[in-house]
Image (cartoon, rainbow, N blue to C red; front, side, top):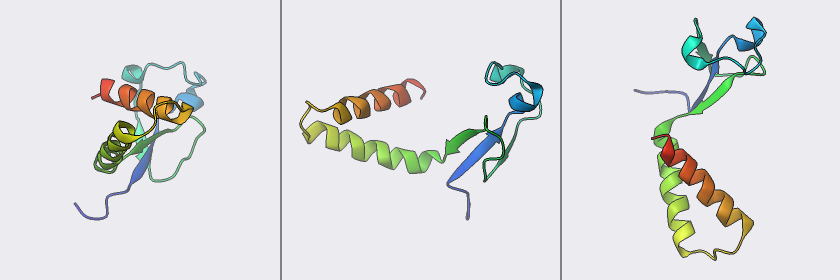
Length: 86
């Protein structure tokens, strides 16, 4: 596919329904998306093929870098959380 957006925003309708983040995604109806954020509660998605390359690069950096930094621990935790979702 050509010209796929690098990111999209899901419009859940939670803000309009007055639940402000207390909605279960599986219970939503009429979820839509846009290339621009429309509402405060829109959920940002980034294309997986772009994230995969970043994940590989960060994994390599973490393997060779000094492990006594807050940034290292934060990157490691973020990668672990991402892999739990796969």
